[in-house]
Length: 90
Image 1 (cartoon, one colour):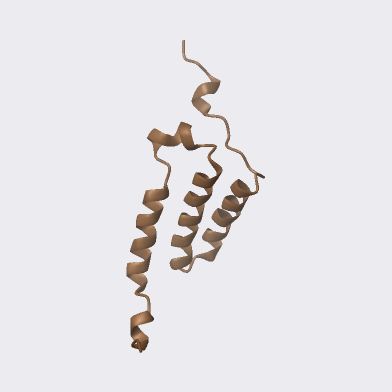
Image 2 (spheres, helix red, strand yellow; image 1 turned 180 degrees about the vertical axis):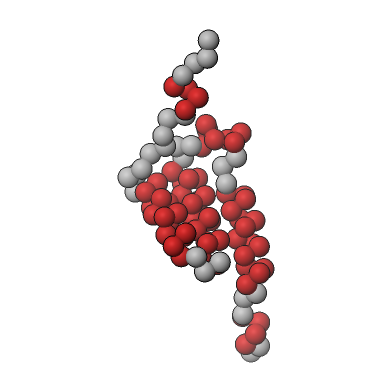
């Protein structure tokens, strides 16, 4: 039988793991154009960010990120065009 405290999660370790996960799932500037319309990548990025806010007891910050993740998955949102492509410098 396991000790009751062994199943208890250390809050700071959990937050640290969530932050590492968010860093891993964040779309880098280098990969932005390639992944900006990748629905799964965008949803993963938003869910990881939401998890951090939930672990910090900030559900009001988590909710819009979860809603955005759902929007990516249900195709109700799309990536905006890249602002640098709209105007060419001469």
